[in-house]
Length: 81
Image 1 (cartoon, rainbow, N blue to C red):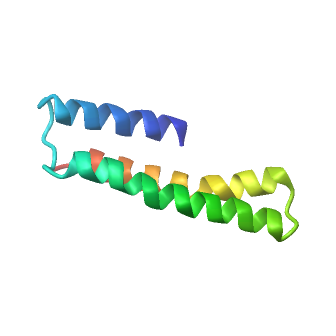
Image 2: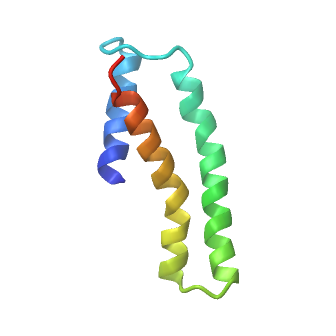
């Protein structure tokens, strides 16, 4: 996930700089998706703790929505145009 996140940041920065093609709404998408994914993450982690999972299990479950979104962004931003 960390490698994909760095790639997503790089692709978005290059798009903003005009070095690679980028959708006009990429900046808005970049901000708007964070609200949704962090809420999903918080709910997953909290739900896991309330269900009696260990902190390590809750951490893993909380990272799942973030990893899924990062992977989807990486695929989308690196797909041939």
